Length: 361
Image (cartoon, rainbow, N blue to C red; front, top):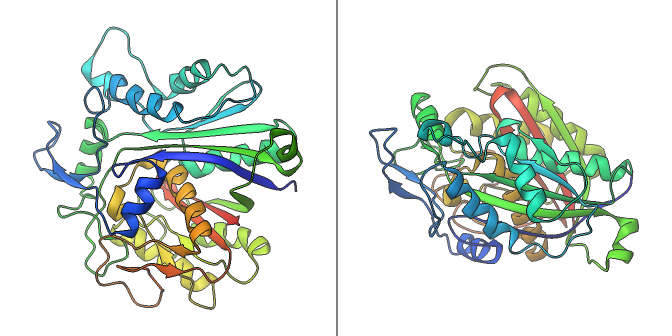
């Protein structure tokens, strides 16, 4: 398979861009603040990006995030293919009831493509909370097959009235902020998020004069199809995805940037998968206790933070994890050194979908 390189990327989170977010994670900073939304009676801790126009999941607010992301993207070859990941996009436009509904998932890629003057066909990926990671795999597969020379992956989702009400009805939200992999975890926290990543093949690096930030060496995708929202208690899906990565990673990766939502069952499922897949303990972290869960954007954001881990040779602290579960080496309040110059970034979503990405420096 052709080697796939990440050549550039940036993110936007409640803690800022990639540099600010990374620095904030290292300081143990939490971007979750109790906020009030009209769709629910409870003020949940949420990770909201400040300074955006519009409200909730409106097109005005989503466009504000997308436009800020696009400002950082360097000039692109016009034949760069766009892969856009989102779960709901500007879903609250359907609640607002405006005459011209804008910013829906099927419209978002067209807006980005027009703003960047791209000529090739764009692809929208909407696979629940694994959408961002799945979009990276889609891009890598087309690059490896020679179907495109350059790929841009954009992932974005916002805290919206519709989404907040849905997770509230599932009783999945924490009242006191997410505590990934903590013994006392009691739910997830939602957050705004967006990010973009540029990828190409090794043979196009020279002509693009780009320097690889990291290499995407392998990936795994699975679906346990156990339940519409709950993961398989035996971690069958994530184990299958991780085993697909094993031939590339050898016996173990240097670390894992996990999905780590802070819900009881998701975290238990992930920890079981990590313990059963790797004979020796592998360092694990989650960033959702600091940033919130940004749904489709999570895979893109966590990939770029994984690139930062490779550069720095350690995992960031897992904000909110004060009493880590036993049996796995979780970063907790401290950084953890990588065992080697590789990292797995994995995400899991509703419907039992799982995706694992394996990166090297």
